[in-house]
Amino acid sequence: MRGFFISVEGSDGSGKSTQIKKIEEYLKSRNQEILLTREPGGTLISEKIRELLLDPTNKEMTAKTEMLLYAGARTQHLEEFILPNLQQGRSILSDRFTDSSIAYQGFGRGLGDMVAEVNYIATGGISPDITFFLDLSPEAGIARKKAEVDHTMDRLELEKQEFHQRVYDGYKALCNLHEQRICRIDASQSVDAVFAEIKESLDRLFGF
Ligand code: TYD
Image (cartoon, rainbow, N blue to C red; front, side, top):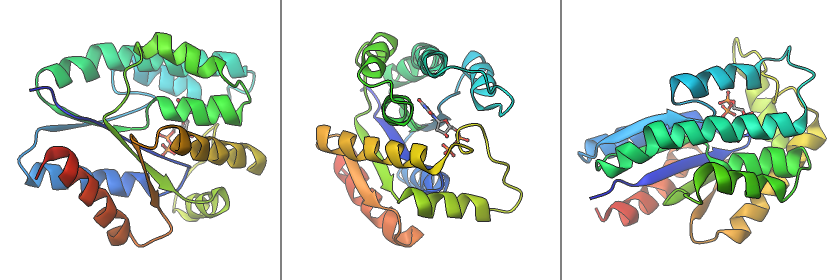
């Protein structure tokens, strides 16, 4: 049987990494073979593209270049890692996927529908079986990030408040568009309360 493809999305500082670890632990405790991965990244080539994308010194990068690099990293990740593993029955847990490009490049950078078109080419229309969107206002998210000890802000995090607000509006639009796939969770709740909601959906998906 093919594995399940799960993605987790959220604005910067929404507690994504913590929840991803909890999902991984939970599914392993249920004897599921689950592979953790991330975007941009997940393969050698995609991780190299990630370095270019997040490097704060790459100030000249245009919005379109940024969109294409994210899409390129995604194609490689999908073809080299995600699809072969799903076909062999392993489940994939990805920190971000195409929704991030729609929110950050489509809404944040203002590239609009072009982003969905390019990503259709990049993914052949493949999307996760379920996506958890950790919903936290951009102000709260950025405040959490800045409070982290030793956290250096990457190129995207350094963007202005308005950019993060547009990204957030993008996620809201995606939630309305894909009600079946995207599970929106109030990320201002405690870690345990957020995970309890995630667990309920996972139990339904895996049939536990
Ligand atoms: P990362 O350090 O993984 O941030 P986070 O912990 O918030 O996930 O960096 C990924 C950054 O890239 C993040 O700011 C979101 C951005 N991004 C896009 O703009 N478009 C995309 O398609 C993806 C996958 C990420």
